[in-house]
Amino acid sequence: MTDAPTAGIRLHARQATSSWRPSTHVHGTWEQARELLSGRRAVVLTGAGMSTASGVPDYRGPHAVRATPILYGDFISDPATRRRYWARNFQGWASLDRAVPNEAHHALSRWEHQDTVGPMIGIISQNVDGLHEAAGSRQLITLHGRSADVVCLGCGRIMARRGLQERMAELNPAVSPDGGVVQAELRPDADAEVEAWQDFVVPDCPWCGGLLKPDVVFFGEPVPRARVASAFAWCDAAEVMLVAGSSLSVMSGLRFVRAMARAAKPVVIINHGATRADELADIRLDEPLTQVLPRLLAPAG
Image (cartoon, helix red, strand yellow):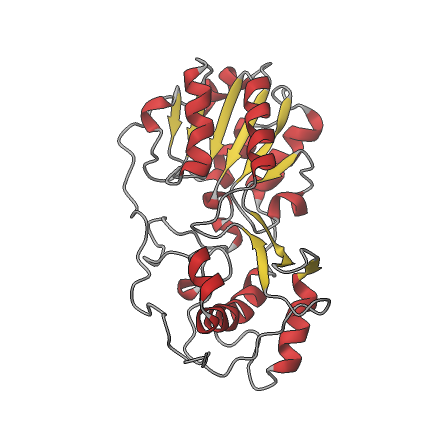
């Protein structure tokens, strides 16, 4: 089969799963949220809003480009789609790799290690940017994987994304790894909007020659069952949930909030804009996470 450069690619059909809407359910204060968290075993659920202050864009924020990430089925089935994706990722990842944790990430890390407002069981994160780990968080479930890793779909081996970046640079010397990509063109998974991709050379697995894919969950791809089971176990053990920076637009995160609500366990949601679980929140705040989390989670006294 010939690798037609535009075969099967929907160049202008990347529409968002949902658009940003303001919250109409804001109620409570950060002081009341702290009182609700104090002394209770807590589980935290985070989303892309945690990392926007670090320069990592989101999909559904008020300033996000209305686009969705690549679909798993498209990536697997079409060579041209993979070439276009990796050409875009090559340039986008170079920008996102420079991101560093912000005050909100550090506040959650301090909470984990110092029990600043009570015991934190762990963080269930929908993010793939690695900023929780960089801030020092260790009790962490990355539901959607890590963009710092690449998996071979043939042999299953994992390699570092930085190593693949170097290999792609060798194979594509005419392409700058940071070719003028601006904030508005980036996606949270480093899928940047670029035009010249038709001749991009994509490396195969160095061990078996198989297809390489970022070790992240694409749209249309299930979250590994073991991660989901571990996350539900944390929810079962928790007495309260804090949601930080997630619109809960996809079921992979929303299901945990619903599980807490079914168990009559309180939920605190802090997010800029509406979420699908606003009506389930005992306290619902719409404030910048870099400002509210350091106050909310500061050591007593």
